[in-house]
Length: 265
Ligand SMILES: NC(=O)c1ccc[n+]([C@@H]2O[C@H](COP(=O)([O-])OP(=O)(O)OC[C@H]3O[C@@H](n4cnc5c(N)ncnc54)[C@H](OP(=O)(O)O)[C@@H]3O)[C@@H](O)[C@H]2O)c1
Image (cartoon, rainbow, N blue to C red; front, top):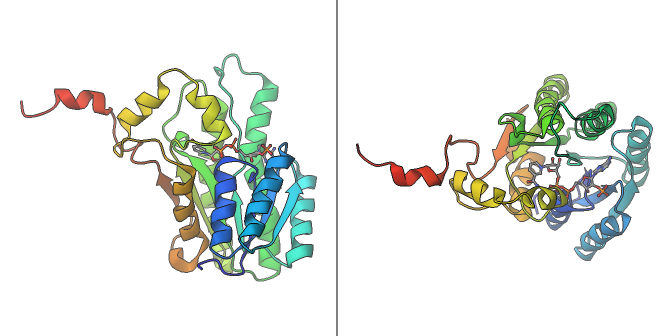
């Protein structure tokens, strides 16, 4: 048990990667604060799975883009558990639209949840960790889109680029208090709501698999190991780092479809 009796807040744990991390962390011995915004039933299912593993689960509705809701969520967690040892900023949304057609409202929504939400949660939990001298672990969920942009995903790409630098900025400020702040940039992960919308886009799965050296789309269960690593002292000298978990998707320029043309010339 690598997270025995730790308390972890995982934002957006009503579905997808967040849900899997909540259950994976509980399997390692952690109590879980399950956060959701719209899907209460699914959040309760996550909590039931955590409790079935013998761990405590507290379900809290909070829109991470709203400061008052984030502060109240973190206060409630402190009242119940007396601390948060691990924060995973996982909540995220996307949209498909060209930047030239994008409305101000959509821009604000996506930047609000993905980037401002990460700032608000890091800040709310970080302040209390410093106050209570908790040498905690903060993990911000990013994407390979932070570096290799995807067309018609402008605000999403931008928000995740911001998350990478926000992670480094918090890491620089909080390191002196023994608080670890790192990120994980996922590639394509199946079995989530975001992935569902994206993979509907005809032929995209084949293109991703062609460009991924490991040759397949990642699963949510493959997200757990890197997150547990960053949540424990196994990563004691890792600070301000963004670990890329993408099956190699972002390391090669062209896909396997060009491999047949290679060879000695
Ligand atoms: N799947 C991929 O291929 C992939 C790749 C790279 C990065 N990521 C990142 O991984 C994270 C999880 O995404 P996912 O793929 O697991 O998608 P998902 O299944 O859609 O999960 C997104 C989660 O975010 C929550 N959320 C949305 N708006 C929120 C808000 N305003 N306040 C609080 N929570 C909110 C949702 O809660 P409700 O449903 O209850 O509103 C849901 O639990 C995101 O940050 C995403 O950018 C995913």
